[in-house]
Length: 379
Ligand SMILES: NC(=O)c1ccc[n+]([C@@H]2O[C@H](COP(=O)([O-])OP(=O)(O)OC[C@H]3O[C@@H](n4cnc5c(N)ncnc54)[C@H](O)[C@@H]3O)[C@@H](O)[C@H]2O)c1
Image (cartoon, rainbow, N blue to C red; front, side):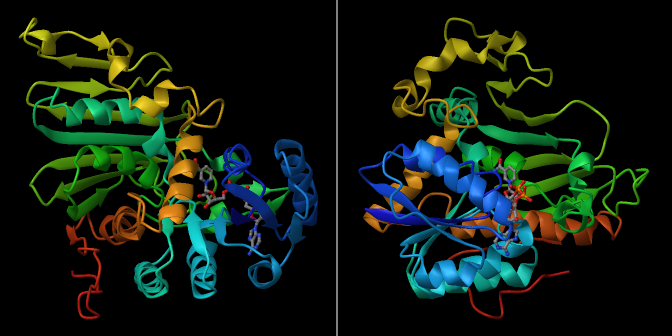
């Protein structure tokens, strides 16, 4: 039985999935600075869990790590807490599943990698958009070669977050750590599902551009950023991160282009579409077909309905399942610390790029055993 502690319980997004696996896992501790939130979350977990006996609540994170009787921590606090809390957990011998983004400085990413390597504990990057059923289906079609060789991907996160910058009348963390910074500070929901289609390729350089800053709130972030990522293979990925523009919420827009056709998610809440050449229809790339016509290619486990009503189309269940399996088998998950660092570094380097007229910046090759000399930003 894996005993879980959750820190930052206002969202509680993964708790339902943990409660639905009572043979393998149990939430035994929760932690939040906000007492009201802690009380509410305790009630919610007691309702969802078949056995919530002994659930302990803490306001101070170090107390949960020390006295919580836990094997693993789920970190759902604001971004600037992620690396310090992950390192505390790893050094205390706990596994970690951490919300996005992985960290807020490049040095933090390297501290994180060093601590994961030294501890031998599991670190999973909770990039749940990779687990959205449509993203899994498109990835399966890419793997089957149905788009031919893919060479271009695009992801957009357009979510007017300006209302979220304050909490109960107080300035919230998003004001400083998200909309208070320049560049594509929150790129991994858009990047993760696309990079999963490019298999073992990696991002070698990025350049970020913006149309300036026209918001009426005095926020430091640009109206939006367009970031171009060049992959080692020479292929291209483009990202729009936009948390300020007044427009409808659309955080799951993606495109893939290959030699035999393409995929486009819907921007308007409708169906995702693909256009591909097939043996029966060699000009099939000229017309759209609903992605759902291809749902037989969804990974088998998604067809069972096991994910139930977990968030992001059931994807939040499968990401938790993969974390639990990683801990059980002691094998690092696919969304490991190196991917977390690579995808998060796009945010951090884009701050430098966008403030230097879109200067092209090299992305370090995050991998096991990087030397100290390699852990730097090359200008
Ligand atoms: N994967 C997704 O789809 C998704 C969606 C939203 C947010 N997020 C990420 O989840 C994280 C949390 O976002 P949110 O919207 O739930 O934020 P939030 O501000 O609503 O909640 C954060 C909670 O953490 C608590 N907290 C803050 N500092 C703490 C500390 N030091 N110790 C203990 N508790 C502390 C706060 O009291 C609050 O209850 C962020 O990293 C965000 O980027 C991910």
